[in-house]
Length: 200
Image (cartoon, rainbow, N blue to C red; front, side):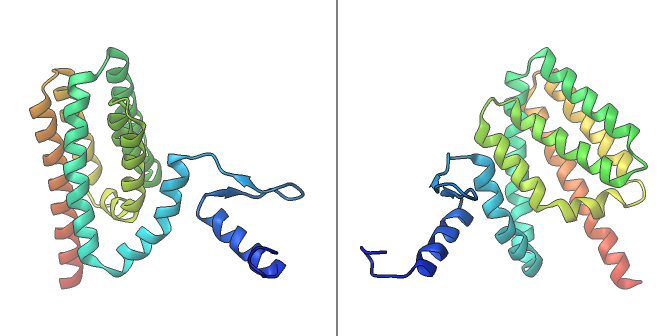
């Protein structure tokens, strides 16, 4: 306050802004302190801005889906090269759980996100895992609409198993192709459904 010749409200507002940016932790009754860097906090800070952008810009949604496809293809390639037997077992278990939840679109979607995050986690790189979680969260509304389409659940399950088969075979190129086919067909199904709704 003395250094900048400002009052308490200005300092309080600045501290709250730094907290919102994830740079400070402010606890009631305690001193403010510098926040520990966190990938999760970084993703959270970006999420509201990204959701606002996507809801007002169809072009941005298409750009994000393109970026996600490129990212997930590379994640599938890395998973095929680095996967362990336990990694493979987790992927299979996730898809089995997803099949059991096929009548519950929200639970089905949770397992869908878990499947894609697990593939990214096989890389062993926490930044890849954080990016995977972020992109899936930003596209959540898109995916909810997709899995509610008739036949969408079975399409997703079949393609997830094709991706697992390529990762199991340690075939990076086939894993990437299976992932691209999965995301491309999902996008095509989504667009066809929305076109039919507009025409109806």
